[in-house]
Image (cartoon, rainbow, N blue to C red; front, side):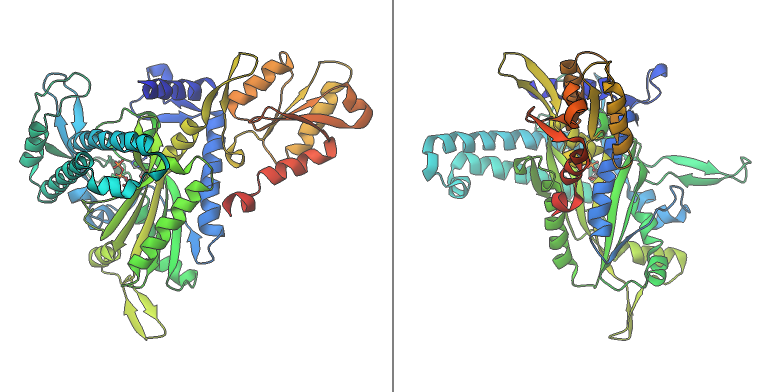
Length: 510
Ligand code: ATP
């Protein structure tokens, strides 16, 4: 319940402080579609930039592209999306609510996992320093049984989905006694497959119009451009192509704010490698991507890997980096070893060769691909929800503060005149005029300075700079730090350097 409250707070804070609005809100919104507001757009842009720099600028063998959202329809036939981009859905006959059958089963397993974690935590407390967690997990009968139960359920589900045995998926839901989370009803329909792609049309007349899809992932724009980039960029294997952009999925269940949207943004990188070397690179990117997440300081304990039992039709290994969202651990990023499935499929459907010529062996081959794929909006939610804190202060009051990583904060500094007279406003405006060449900064003169600090705490601004009467005498200002609330007196000429140090990509990314 506490988590549910926290999630509600996140959603209302995102609206109140100009981060996220429901799409077309004046018409009561559009389900699972959202608009990024004045601060949200900045945070989102900064996350995208943080990813782009680490992937593209920091790797001499990775380049970026920006492919179109609309692609030739055969793309989606080749990729398997027309035939297999389905989710198994199930309806509850009483509540008329629709669910993803696999998610209902996974949530059930997560409950079993929570029981196991509870046992482990209890034992940890009991045995103190002498506790050997690995041994306990392997030998405690209760924990062993919980882990076994989960494994069997997931394996059975994976097998049935693989074999398209949807009747068994329903049977599994019934055998486990899974009820509608909202109403408790166990009155289920059969499980059906549902294709997630949005269709659209290209062309003016109804007869000649061509059926198209809005891309459900950005990856295919990279595959179809593989040879163009390789040739024009003179790229040698291994090399990567990165892309960020919109993707569209007609999600069955979309009730978790920006976690599951129908229009969202992905940040993907496809890394082309020699066949046989894919597992080495898969391990490499697993570690590399986790390190990227950890660099933001949201807490190591909030991440975990989840290796896939059920592999997508194109993959020979896959893992998710899961994040501890306010509603529990869920997928944030996928790392997939996609084999040569996509390039081979596009070769077959287009009749064009998509191979790499190896000058050392004088032979052509189709590269294997390791993909890293993260949802920008999910990353936004991870950062935003983790950063929102309510703190009790020494004087008994409390403050709401958004402790965003400084490098990602939408507004880097707010500049205040202490009072609206004696020339303090002019000095503050001059400081803004100077800083805005390099940073997104704002000027604020409204209300008492304490209230202005609180307002910036809630927006997540890391630095507040106040101009007072002493400024006129010695050209110093106070700089107040969001997280510690400590204040320092520094020279006006030192402000820019101070911010620069705090937002250096080098220090954050390394
Ligand atoms: P899920 O199992 O949650 O539906 P997925 O496995 O289908 O996700 P991928 O196809 O691997 O997701 O997409 C890569 C990334 O894109 C995901 O890790 C996620 O961060 C993001 N993503 C996927 N679907 C959505 C969505 N509907 N809304 C927001 N982000 C999404």
